[in-house]
Amino acid sequence: MERELLLECQRNDRNAQRKVYEQMAGKLYSVCKRYLKRDEDIEEAMADTFYKIFTKIDQLHQPEIFEAWARKIAVNECLQKLRTAKHLHISFEENHVSNSDMAIENISFEKDILSLLNFLPEGCRAIFNLFAIEGYPHKEIATMLSISEGTSKSQLNFARKKLQELLVNQNI
Image (cartoon, rainbow, N blue to C red; front, top):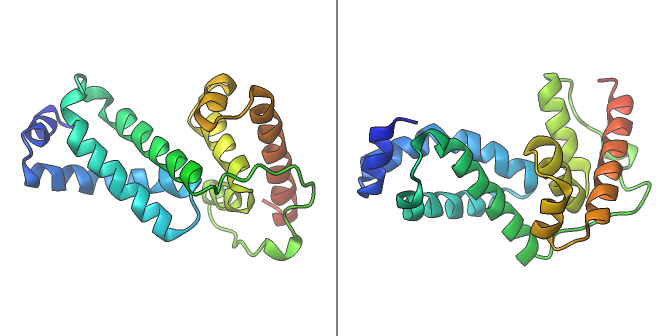
C-alpha cells in the first residue's frame, strides 16, 4: 500500500479511503469468508473491519505492514462475531460431515480446499484458519477464543482429519 495513500486516509480523505477499500476489499472478504458462512455476517464483519481501519489508521506507524494489520483486524472482527453470536461450535462428533453435504465441483485445488472448510463446524474452522492459515500458536488461539490449549489442539486434529476425509471423498 502506498505511504501517501495511507497518509491521506489518516487525514480522512474520502477518495483515498475509497481507493484503499477497492484495493483491500477482495483480500479481506476472503479472510472473512474463511471464518463466517452467512453472507450477512461476512458483510457485517467487512463493514466493521473497514470502520476500524479508517478510524484507527492513525495508530499505524509502519505503512509497510498495512495489509497484515488490516488482515488482523478482519480476523478479530470475525472472531468477535463468532463469540457474540454464540456460533462458535466446537465439535467432537466423528460423523459431522455427511456424504450428502459434498456437492463441491472440481475447481482449482486451493479453492477446493477453501470450499471444504465450509463443511467444518465453525469452531473447528476458526481454529484451523488461525493455526494453519494465519499462523497463530495454540496458546494465542486459546486466549482469543477463551478455550484451553488442549481444545485448540484437538479441534485442529479433528479439522485435519475431516479435511482429509473430504479430500479423499472428493478425489482431490
